[in-house]
Length: 207
Image (tube, rainbow, N blue to C red; front, side, top):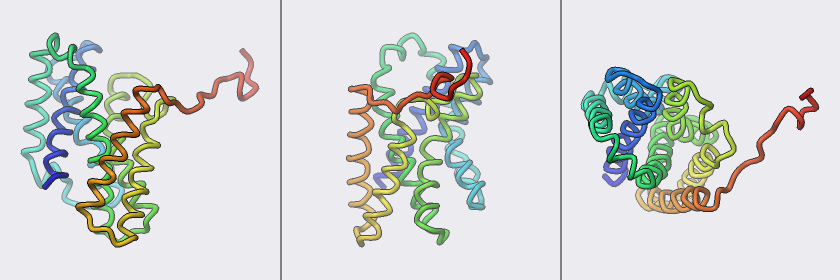
């Protein structure tokens, strides 16, 4: 129940953030709704396709598509006001990242795959929507830059799998992972923790 509520909050926030980025790229209303929906539902779709898990979540629950289209439309209508809530979007995105990751791990675990694949499935669920958004908006995906994002999803997935292996029930395991993952993500944003960025000089390339 908790994860489902967080999932709904997350897809709304992700759809709105995708629409706002689309506006900065000069997209029309259709483009905004498309980018918003892809941002919110893309991670779960990629996961399900890779795992052969059908029907896809948004096909089983078409209301998810309607929710994301509605959220993207609201973002387009109130863009000027929403720009003042950028920090709120960062906070909700952090919650969504971890919630998506835990949900992805749960889905993969039901398919009897190895723990490593469970962790990867969780991370894919958490980050692929944002990757697709960035690609549609013609910019370098966030997960391929120095910011701690994908690594946090992988860590959250690994922690969730480890807790399950220690016979911790799904509900308390989810709460622990949400708390730890959210805290690490917000600390990374606050203190600008980053991974090393490699340049042409690092590889010995000519300038």
